Amino acid sequence: MAKQFDVVVIGAGPGGYIAAIRAAQLGMSVACVDAWSDVNGKAAPGGTCTNVGCIPSKALLQSSEHYEQAGTHFAEHGIEVKGLGLKLDTLLGRKDTVVTQNNQGILYLFKKNKVSFFHGKAVFNAKVDAGWSVKVEGKDAEELIAKHVVVATGSSARQFPDLPFDEEKIVSNDGALRFSSVPKKLGVIGAGVIGLELGSVWRRLGAEVTILEGASDFLAAADRDVAKEALKALTKQGLNIQMGAKVKGIDGKGKGVEVSYEDASGAEQSLKVDRLIVSIGRVPNTDGLGAETVGLKLDERGFVVVDDDCLTNLPNVWAVGDVVRGPMLAHKAEEEGVAVAERISGQHPHVNFDTVPWVIYTSPEISWVGKTEQQLKKEGRDYRAGSFPFMANGRARALGDTTGFVKVLADAKTDEVLGVHIVGPMASELIAEAVTIMEFRGASEDIARICHAHPTLSEAMKEAALAVDKRALNF
Ligand code: NAI
Image 1 (tube, protein in one colour):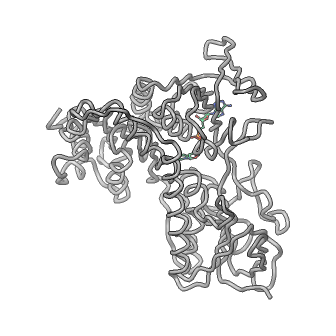
Image 2 (cartoon, helix red, strand yellow; image 1 turned 120 degrees about the vertical axis):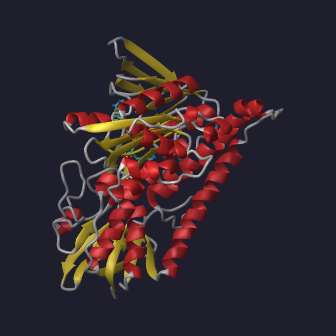
Image 3 (tube, rainbow, N blue to C red; image 1 turned 180 degrees about the horizontal axis):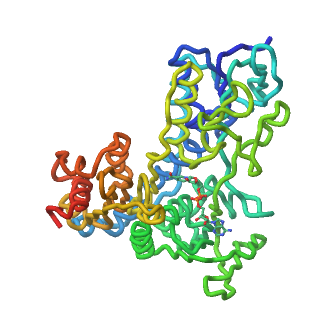
């Protein structure tokens, strides 16, 4: 006998599990289906973000940062460390514990909100009178009937043509979180978010890291000043980042991996490494979803086609997160998940894509929201810019972390904040103020007039806003 629900959510990543919780909060009967299993075969809801993305990578970034601090920066504070060592098993084990805590947190939230969870793969079965029939394959095999379906199946790492990941030597973001030893030489293809974050982790732990990036501009989506400062800092730390590299072939048959490529000058090169991370973007997960069975429209790249409200071509079938257009960011997926649940209940929410923040958790961290200076120039928009370096910020000096700056871009006439770009300590946290101001369509003068606690890094934001009007006080 099929089980009936108001809403069935396929996928328990940040888009799916949040949509399920919000729908339940609004009084609907909700099921969420997810196939992810941990090493013991137990359900591991949370998707890529929780299992092999945001959460484990941040755990490793933290551990590796501590290691590097202890090895290089503690001495500046007069702290002597003798016999510094690395227990990789413990470090990776801690990361696994953090992941498990998050998996269990989601299962707890499902219980608390009375969301029925099914561990298995959900496949569209048929259109039925009461809505949609969805089959759950796996341990919790079941037929579910839903008035509304939310597809939140996420994305997977894009592999190099004809080069599947073995997750040991040639790895995606997944294998790169669990190397059994620190590689002596590590290669990375793609200097995007994953390449830079995981490249940084293994470099801090002792690997010699070379990153081959196909594009000629470093972090093409970021403001050029930020990208320049970040490239300088990351290179100084020892990441060998080669721009304009055209990969010709990858040979993983021998002991290590050999990458042949053409460098920016057109010269043939070969890179021999112990392991290789391939981080060249991600592809949407729609295989085996039964899209063709029910006529769910996908675009030529496999994304589920949705309108501005995340509604697909099928009545009462919605899709959110990495499986639809827009940035592949957990927080974008969450916003869409909430909005869809609210739309199903008859509300009229709005997701503002113009204020979705970007964060890269390197050291220095990089974050931004809104337009870059280059975008404003291209649009012919009249703007004013103000920057403030962390070098002139008391808290940053006390922390011993003075790399980078905050840059505020504001409309020349109205002073509305159009973009904020940060490279420096705690950029991931500092960006929230900029997002808030922009969400309220505030002006740079609003930031400048807000009382910021002293001494904090956030004062750099205030000073950058003051600099828009050429009246920074501490620089
Ligand atoms: P990405 O899109 O950030 O970067 C991929 C890079 O690979 C680009 O710079 C691209 O030019 C380069 N590339 C593509 N093909 C290449 C080739 N054949 N040879 C050399 N370079 C090549 O993708 P990434 O790093 O794989 O991350 C995937 C997604 O995951 C992103 O959309 C990102 O937003 C998300 N993510 C977000 C994080 C965060 O918010 N902190 C952390 C990790 C991932």
